[in-house]
Image (cartoon, rainbow, N blue to C red):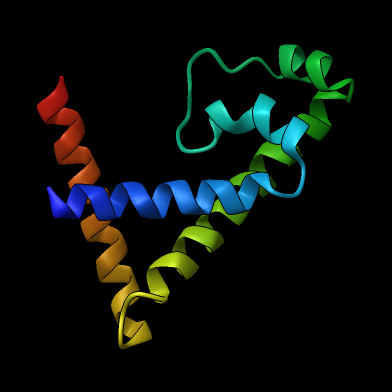
Length: 104
């Protein structure tokens, strides 16, 4: 359970940092942040944001990239050696995957 709480903290902290800059865009795109989704409609998202579809694709790509950077930085702050970050991120993903499998 402590691992799951830590994983949840890192994800929420990175998400909060990501949302600080462009709240309206974040609110529309955040459901598509962490995984590919079958219901992703660039046309619908473009209409909600009043921008071209190609711009939405770029926004999602950049938001996902920024999310990875922020999550990595949050984890880096908790380890003594920066070389441990990748291992911690793998552990975080495994913890979340196990939690999802348990919940299903």
